[in-house]
Length: 362
Figure (cartoon, rainbow, N blue to C red):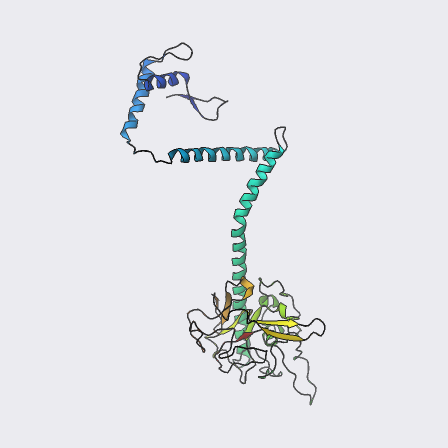
């Protein structure tokens, strides 16, 4: 059947003759007066009836009770799309005589609604990207630790393994930024005291095994990616992104002994270092207000990236390596990387009694 376009209507229309034929077929009359005093063509009426007879070939069930409401909803949706299309066309044309402030407000509302729907997913994507970047940092740090161990009889990062003062049990390991152990020592002078475990990790930068940016987690707003490679420690506790295995032990730990352990991870949330602004004195605070299985705060407390001694970096939502049992059985049957076996209080002088007990500290 023929169609023609009416510029005043958005949809295609039947020709007047076919419209008369359809009306005649519907009323089951061969001839029906037309709107202009004409009669419908019998041949056209016959073709219209032949088309209508096809409907009976496709039987349908009873309509659903919500047919009307769903139909109206579809009509309203189509109207909304049409309004939005017209607003977009008006915006693309720029200012026009027909443009109104109400149209601008409606367009802005649509854009705001769309942005509000997309923003959470964009935030999740950014967070996931930073988590992956952090994991890559740990893997690169693992390569640097492996190179250091190869150059120092297999020992992990630790003063005392490179003709420098040793980190002895009982010394404080939380006074970040106070060490200057690499300066030449005068003859007869007593060995300098290592006061922070982070100074041991800083050897990766000090000795040129990694770029300083590798040890700056993207999620740490206080990280300093361009620290001085001639320094011996980070300038302040907040700048430290990762917690390293406690090296204030009686004997050095070799990397092959630590192959199944966690040796580096996102910052320990249970140990907070507070600096007195007047004296510069550091105080360690053990966060008893947090559960012992709290996740690092660097990734929204969703979990933490953990570096194994074998150089592999993994993600875990709990503070222990997934699917691996270690020295101390925790309530989950695994070693809590934040704590020492049997201790429930910390002042910054503690030392793991077991060599394979992970204890990651600033």
